[in-house]
Amino acid sequence: QVQLVESGGGPAQVGGSLRLSCSAAGRSSNYYMAWFRQCPGKEREFVASISGSVGITYYGDSVKGRFTISRENGKNTVHLQMNSLEPEDTAVYYCYLDLGNFGGKNWGQGIQVTVSS
Image (cartoon, rainbow, N blue to C red):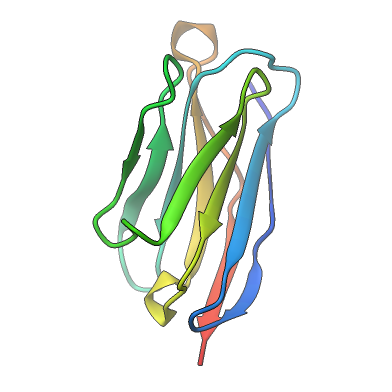
């Protein structure tokens, strides 16, 4: 129902940085948004989220201290700043938006991040 546009992926070196962005066009209020990732040969895992009420953030254990999720208030646009990248961060990253009764669950198409030495 809602189109999520992801950008900012690509190749990176170990120890480098990337910034992913996800926008939900046509929405001007804040909702719960999150990032998940699918690593090669592994199950999809939670990366980071930000609440739609007061902007509370949560992070997966593997990215705490290295990744930061943020929101552009009122635009339903989130960013994932990824620092100190490791080869284990290589994955397809998916943006997620939960509109509840106003639109349900929405997923981006995924964006590739490749970290190599």
